[in-house]
Length: 201
Image 1 (tube, rainbow, N blue to C red):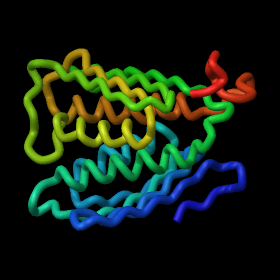
Image 2 (tube, one colour; image 1 turned 60 degrees about the vertical axis):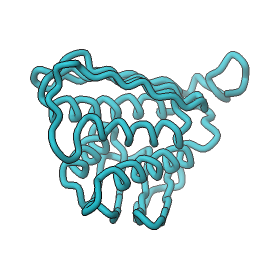
Image 3 (cartoon, helix red, strand yellow; image 1 turned 180 degrees about the vertical axis):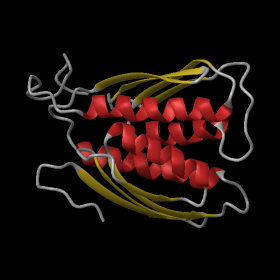
Image 4 (cartoon, helix red, strand yellow; image 1 turned 135 degrees about the vertical axis):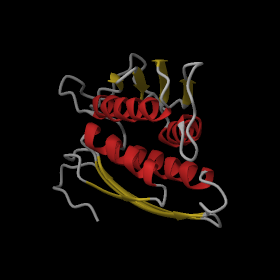
């Protein structure tokens, strides 16, 4: 269980279905410590990359019917992560709201933009020339990001400008996602309530 001081924004979520069982905790104001086990090694690696580059303390223990397909576990981890981020940032008072990051990975450039607007939407564009890997690949990652965006109530744009190697594409996106979400959730002392001309999301 993640421990923090009284100022840390921490959430813990448990979800159990006939297909998956997940326990997840996140500290938005962490340092990038993590302990992750989903049964899908490359997915674990990408969640670790997200944690480290976003400075989120993240613990995930997930089990699912991966002998059938990876889809249920990947999608449900996204659901729980989105719920946890939403719970951790609470009423969103003082947060920057917007985040942007571009991360090169060898021949690949992945860009992620986030608006924690409360209006979920996913844009997900990959290069035409990508060679998808078996197992957890860039196309299955789309289902993860769709779940995170929907449950985290975020407008999430993922645009990989170019790249061919599937693993490089995914890693550039997960690094950018961590960095962009770190920006969007950061407290800005200039923002006294919420960052909206309407006064409400």
